[in-house]
Length: 114
Length: 114
Image 1 (cartoon, rainbow over the protein chains, first blue to last red):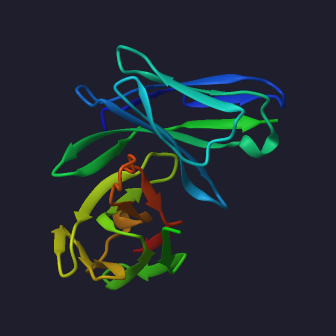
Image 2 (cartoon, each protein chain N blue to C red):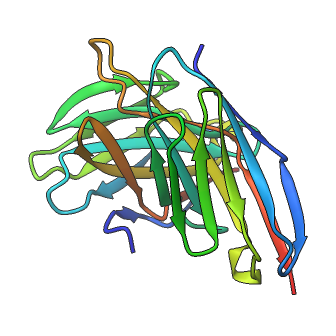
């Protein structure tokens, strides 16, 4: 168990809809990362938050947004969903030692857009 | 552009048959190279971090090595429970912006038959 909690585990929805994925980081970790994993693209970095502030952006679509709350949990909002958004979405939290960030991943949310 | 390439895509071994997985990378400046193990339907699980060429890390039947252009994950006398997808990732040096995010390869799917 990595200590990172993601809910829900599975989500089935229709095109055009909006969903929210939730993540609770490990106790004491201030950084939260969101990744998308699909069969053809592998793990792709979406966005990072650190102590409530956006820190870095990756390949995140404009239809997607995220935030980190004062209690450090994070939510990833996906709107106007398309079939191609079907993927595994992972949240990770990190601890930094000597300039190196080690990521600990949750078990993911499987999103199916029908 | 920072990039990580893993080979082979898939590897089938007999129990006890040792082999190596390759991870080639191009990055503007390497802060760290990471190996993760991912089981089906689960999040990546941290295995090793390597920081500089010549460094080696070991854990049970796994040994990771690093050169200036690639890393190898050596598996000695594998067992069926070693079957998983092994992911390699690099973390680039932060040149002012936060680049704590990891850039992942697409992974090597390892199957070990009894």
